[in-house]
Image 1 (cartoon, rainbow, N blue to C red):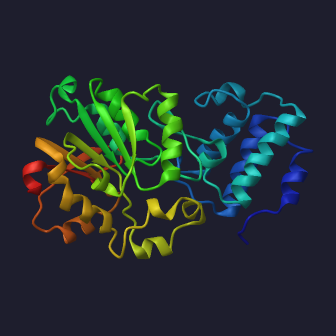
Image 2 (image 1 turned 180 degrees about the vertical axis):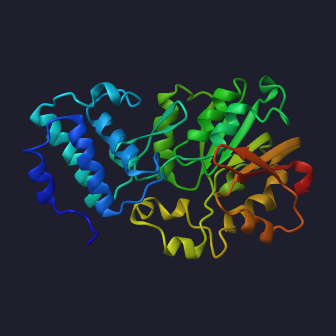
Length: 305
């Protein structure tokens, strides 16, 4: 019979578990029993358990093996069990427990004011969209719509060292988190945080590059989200009956904010079919990512006019 284990199993464990290996085995069993959902940094019980244990013990996140049989102090065991119990009983995404998320080698602060960063655009920014923007130093402005934690805006600033980046979000709370991250990276003079409903607060601003990881979850999928995803702000996920509500608005307005030769890059998750149904006359370029070739599309300004 499935379901979250009671607090008694965690209390009992504290008297018997001694090593990282013990805690890892215990965690994987509890996670599987509770039928947790993953996808906020890891996609399986083992990897998530290892991450939470290493983080709680302040050990290197990529170095599990050397510590597997290390004997732990009773207080360390209790600290790890407390974290594991929160993950099981509260169904919190691991990133909200650790208050950090990673995109490649870059760490970002996160909490329940923002969705957990997991954008596939991050790896594309690292490549610089070189087929369209061959000279990174020539990009002097960029825009991140629906910035959330500010992670893509920060990656844009790092990839295009001459660029001033506008990071836009409707949520004032999300921008508070973005400010923490911008300050952590020392980019206050290059990343401007703008509270705006998409382009509404950007009158007259035009860019060679706009990226957006907007809400794109359709109504049916919202109704069926696992508990972990329901802990994220619905404002950053829900996008109407077909998931294209926000994307429609972006595509309708983007040409006024793109410079000649400029490009718009939009992430839609598994929504390629919805994009093609909603915009049958568009012929976007679907960009290859490690997770697939139908998650992110690119449009040039001339295609939007």
